[in-house]
Structure formats: C-alpha cells, structure tokens
Amino acid sequence: MDAPTHHNPPLFDVNAGTMPRGGDIYTFLQVRQSTDNIVAPLSDEDMLLQSTPDTSPPKWHLAHTTWFFENFILREFEENFVPFHPRFDFLFNSYYDTLGEYLPKNERGHLVRPTMHQITDYRTQVEQRVIALLNSVTGEDLETIQTLIQLGMHHEMQHQELLLMDIKRNMFSNPLLPAYAPIPLALALHPHTTVEEKVWGEYPGGLVQIGADPEAGFSYDNEGGQHRVWIEPFQFSLDLVTNAEYMEFIEDGGYEDPALWLSDGWAAIKKNGWKHPLYWIPSDKGGFKEFTLYGVRELEMDEPVSHVSYYEAQAYAKWAESRLPTEFEWEYVSGLEGYPFHHGKLWEWTQSAYLPYPGYEPIAGPLEEYNGKFMCNQMVLRGGSFATPPGHYRHTYRNFYHPEQRWQFSGFRLARDV
Ligand SMILES: [Fe+2]
Image 1 (cartoon, rainbow, N blue to C red):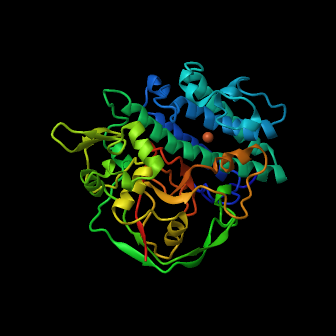
Image 2: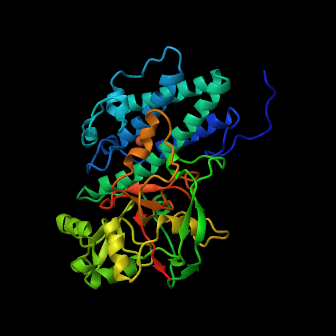
Image 3: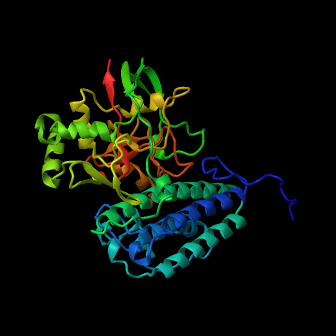
C-alpha cells in the first residue's frame, strides 16, 4: 500500500491540468454534490416542471448530466459496459445528433417516469462506476478519462446555472409566484451591487491577443484558437446598466420608438408584447416589483438590470448614444492587470456574433457537437453571473444565446467609440 499523502486534495480545482488520483475523485464528487444542493429545496412536483420550451425539468438536468459521464466515459472505457437503462440514451441525450435519436426538447416535461428515486439511483451508480474506472486504469487511458471527467464537471457546472435559470422561469409561470428558497440562502443567489455614478474607462486598444491559452488549464474548444485582433480606441463603462437607468429608457418611450430597435428586435417586442425586462411586474401603485428566486420584492433600483434580451440591450445602448462592447473589447479589458470589474453579477451581452475563431479546432468525435454546431444566429455573452459556479469562470469564456432569449442571467454594459 502507498504511504499516506500529506497533501490535501485540491478544493474545487476543476481547472488544473492533470491532478493526482484522489484529487479528481474528490473534486468530481464535490461538483456532483453541488448539483444535488441546488435541487434540495424542490419538491418532486417541482422536479418535473418544464414551463417553456427553453427550460428543462430539474430532474432531466440531474439525469442528463449523469448520462454525459455514462455515455462519454463509461461506454468508451468500461469493460463489458452495460447501460444503467437501455432507453436513457434516448431520454437524456440533449442534442448529440451523431449519437442517434433523442427525445425532443419540448417533451422533457413528460417524463413522469423514470421517478426521482430511479434518477437518484442512476446518479449514484454512475458516480460509483466512474470512480471505480478511475481507480482501475493507467497510462494513456487514465489521462484521457481525467480529461473527459474534467469536461464532464464543467458541463455539470454549466447545468447548475441552467438549473437556477430554469427553476426561476418555472416558478414565475405559477400564478402563486412561489419562492425557490427562503432568505437568506436566496439572498446570496441574487445579484447585488452598489452603483454610484457611471464611470467610463478609456482604452487605447491596439493589436491584442484573444482566446484561451490551451496550456493554461481547462477551457472549452470554442475559446481557441488564440489569435490577434485589432481594437480601435474605445470607452468602456465600468458598471453594468442599472434598473434605475433602464427605467429611464422605459419612461422615455424606449419600447415605443422603432428608430431605436433592430428590425428583428422590433418584431420580437411586438410579437411578445414586451414592455419591460422578463421578471419585472407592473405594480398597482405604478412602478415595478421584481420576481426573484426568493419571491416577489421591490425593484432594487441600483442593481444591474437583468433578464433582458440582446435586442433590449441594443435598443437601450442606442438610446444612451452608446453601443454594446465587442467580445474582444470585453476580453481585452478584463485581461488587463488590475482590471476594474469582476465576475459575479450577470452575463453581459456583447455585440459580437458567436462565430468560430481563426484556427478553431473542435473536440474530435461526437463531442464536436458540444459548442461548434451552434455557431450561427447567436450572440456572445461574456463574464459570468452570480449563479456561475466558482471555478467555472474564465475571462476568455464565450457564452452564447439567441438574441431573443432572456431567461438567462443576462445584463449588459455600454461602450463607445472614441
Ligand atoms: Fe448538457
């Protein structure tokens, strides 16, 4: 038997290159536990709700994140692999077309069966099998499996944020507007900021390096290849646009002035009847209340405006005689030494379309479908939100959504040409 090590396993070090065996198991179980913690306040009834085609039932997230490990690791490396259930590939494959047919996304709310009990068993069994596999392989296989587990952990962390987005959207669809969690837990889950006067940074730009260094720890394939981008001098707001500022836009008739809107944006607000951000609730006394993860409360005017679409962010920026930053400006400023803002508020819309970087190389095999196939008709969001798990933030991270989507934790800041 090996001598006991005196090193503690790394705490939540999901970004390290390869870690000592034990460290990765510990981290793997921590990430899995965090998912269970998020759904702990939910009832079994809550677990099945899919209130819009964009959202997934919480129990589907629990099974799908498990399927990811089962399909991409156990199926490939386990001797005499037998799936937990022969039909789970069909139920819990999200969108990997090369792997075969799968349940249409808008039917995930039909899954009364398998029961929560079975899904909990599924999670536990796959975890145990992943750990057994890690303990039994050596050499090249071990490295490949460690890399895949790391990807699976980041995938699960992405789903942890999705869970909170979907739970919020689901609760909002209920006329009782129930709270997901009582204060104070939920207080920690709501963006907080103290915004004073808007401060603009001025940056010279120039020729800058964009994209993730593959040697510097974990990153998704869509953050490479590294390449150079020329940036003209620009101004960059050091704060996100606040509820108070967004209220001025509404009161000034922002939603009624077609000159402010992109053609698609104008069509979207007409089609959806939008007159304010997603979770604002017009109050009897005038003004707005806001639905949050802990129920309805007064709209906090100095908090960043959240749950706006790209179209609304763009119209506001035009009204404010500014524009949204490009993803390159955002990455450049956030990479500067002593950069003046931090992760932890909201994902920020940029005016950059989600496209492959020069030299982009997708992961080989079915996992090529993880990011690359979505590089059309979506916009890049940068930063990370209060719901982004620790360890999942990178300043090169490229999140992406359709311009009309606004159930994600999205806000924005302004930029200006100099
Ligand atoms: Fe997924």
